[in-house]
Length: 161
Image (cartoon, helix red, strand yellow):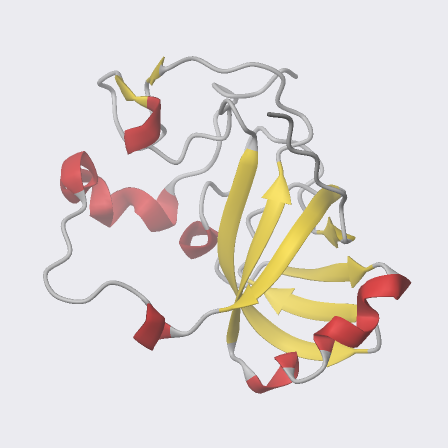
């Protein structure tokens, strides 16, 4: 089965290179960006401005390969790819929850963006906390590294540059 997606827009951010950029929105505190939604999808932005946060679902356009065992940014131990948020994946899809500042025509102003400038946007979804996990939440191996998330940037280990 072949699955084909077409971008619905482009994410613009201050990050021009993979090396040194934040690895998650929490580490991108205050970083502003814009999402340019292609004109044919503008009508779909109706009512989005009532949300404080949105999911950006995007294509890691600069990644070309992957490994099933990786050493994630927050650890020194090799881990299974699917227990990490490493960008090099069999299907190079990324997801970030960002603050929505405003929506004007086909431009969405965002904050806490951790995405490379020029990244193709696949979808937008509103962040609705009530829709997410209930009960106790476990974060596996990340538990020991939680305090480092807001201080960690990409060091190039998943970059082709």
